[in-house]
Image (cartoon, rainbow over all chains, first blue to last red; front, side, top):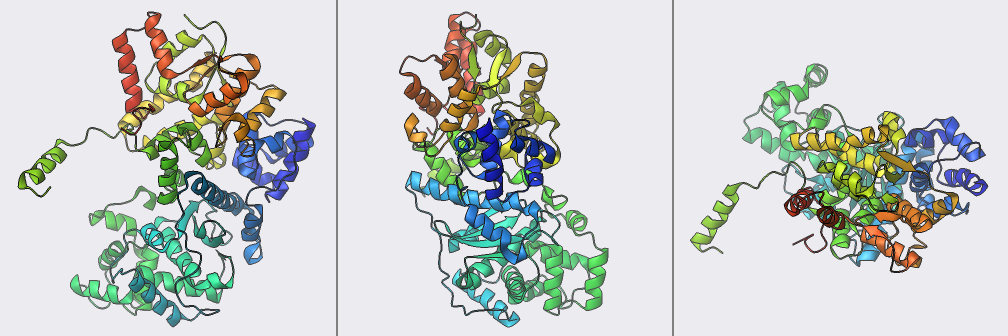
Length: 401
Length: 209
């Protein structure tokens, strides 16, 4: 067991975790991690496998005490050191992101399916894009490039797919004074990749994706990564971009006009209609309206302080995502992965490159998770409605097929 | 009648017999107690703090499956029923019907090598095994136990280690044996298999038919 002891502390340090981080991730005390590293006690087999996964090393290296560089250690280190150093609570999520990218690249090699990853921005950008007007113009430019018009963006991940940007979500901590909202990384094999903090509200996550798109498209020339934390001109640019991208001024005005809303919003119900149409968070909506001078400072403050936006939206008949009341990272166990990765994983199983259990452990899924990805029937699927057959029959009768 | 030599049980087999409520049949086929490695089921996880449960990919494979159904059960009554069946794994352990096997130092090293990306090819694999399968293969090889799995990759690794004549059980093989031994009728076996298929159990010939 002496080999294990020697390897454990080294692997942890190389992966840039404290003993506290490891204890929290595995559900043991810091003291226990210390005992493992001192050889006073030994991790059990499950804990050893979990440590290997957490540190990004082969379990064999841990067991045999080999000193190896963990997968993605340099990238993880770069991200964690960014912006003067991130809070340690973000470390497991950042490491998970980097390990995911390594796995994605490996899966691409195994299946022979390419990752359509953007590695250079198609947009002209000059160093230190920071001006508000620049950001708004650039948001319009990206919308035009993607032919998105002026309406809402129903699926921000689909926008990233169109651009060739990979999005991954991981919990990074809910205290945003310490934790980042997200990060951008230009990965050598995957290309542009975004990390989004799952510990934020649903609306804030969407905003963060748009924010990180700004970094990817307009700041990638300045470095391989950007961690979104703190306030800098670059962060302000990305915020401005995200607001205009999700709620284009012209689109908001057009909607207000068509919906018969007054040019100055004072009624909470009107604000909710705008928010639900553009699928943004209530704070983002109010801030955008304020930026557009479509709400007075007094009305802004009143709505900000007095409205319960989820309850009001529910009473107006809007469907409510369960996460609008409380974030639940567990709901994102599968959805945290980009759809292209899940398609590739499915392909690996279909083509016999991986058995289903191997594919499950490769991605960190349970067997039922994997079955769900494979599109196999699961509990609760129920019988398909008979009306589908009737619909087919109607089409076929008319001769359109 | 149970098989002569001890068996080590992989997640897939335990999971699907539990999901269809046939854990008693599994015990009659493989003998009591059923034996699993810690990577498949870790009883200590019941008392893990919420913070640790955020990283579900670090849990044992059975606990990960339970977590899946815990989430699904929030919106789906059928999943609630399946969750209750899966949670029986805890009472099976408490009652001594399920035993966790500790790996020896040599088995632990072999299990680690089976999970190694560098060494996968040495075992005839393109991708390394997961922790549960690796532990089962290591125990089966070192102790000459029967491995009960439905993972082709695990069986490939065991064949590479042991040669062609290694003892193993698969779900369908177990159901056929249950019929042969008169534990269930052929119709019951077919129904159990169909139920498993409805719950996503793969069949290489029908997986994507």
